[in-house]
Length: 340
Ligand SMILES: [Zn+2]
Image 1: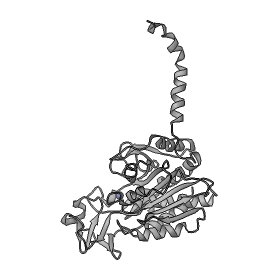
Image 2: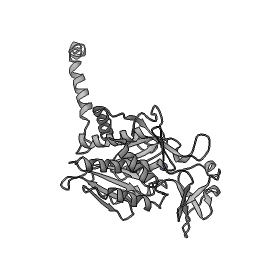
Image 3: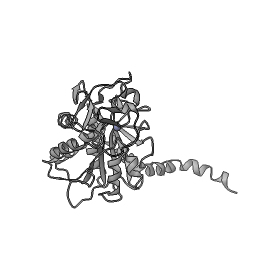
Image 4: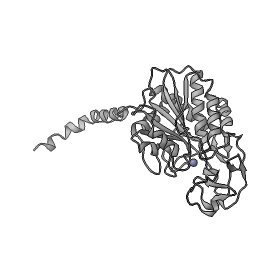
């Protein structure tokens, strides 16, 4: 897929301010970007998560791709009792929501206000040498990848169905994903795929393709869905890494708690939650080619497995079966040694 198509979407979404519970600006931008897509039915659920069904109406979506619209940031204190926070989390009338160690908050890096919330005063979008740098890659890059997927398939006259969800308030403990799972608007055997940005761990690296996440810090994900993603990458020559990304948790874990099948794919991320290795508040960054490969992978996945992940592992079954056949002479050669 052409990286310039994705870059336009990335620029629109990453330039939009957001914070936990204050995702309304991102929501509006995504709705506007999807407006020209006649094959996408877009609606908000009762909590304000955005639900999209793409493709022919007589088909049932089996893959549901999800990304969250918030990013750690400062929000206006509610009037009611809103819990206990450490002193370093307060800034004027704001409190910081999201997973950032106190030592980084204590650097007192300047903030930029957007009405009832504020973000670090960092550039919203920069691109150079195949690198996208932003105050909020997590998870606006994931949102951008899904929007790019929908727009691309609209243009290429897609005949398959899939779902997309853009959730609220992930950074405070999967609030939007939990609300979504409680009112799950898709069929029960559909598979939710968390599209995230994550710190590469183990052997995974930035620039080597999206990471098929076999699990996170909390749970492991569906084996058949994971295998479908990896097989698709291999068949279509798309670079895909495989890793247990247990440096953090994602919405797939929350949604799996409600009995829904889940998988995860992450774009390798630098300066997670704006925390640089040197202890400073800084821009997050991803490689553009990893985002392009992610969108290519999702396009291929829908094409290769239009009915969602299979209920059994055909390739592993065939591999095991043919190995037994290959070993038959050795098996027969030792039959006599086992006769009683
Ligand atoms: Zn995050």
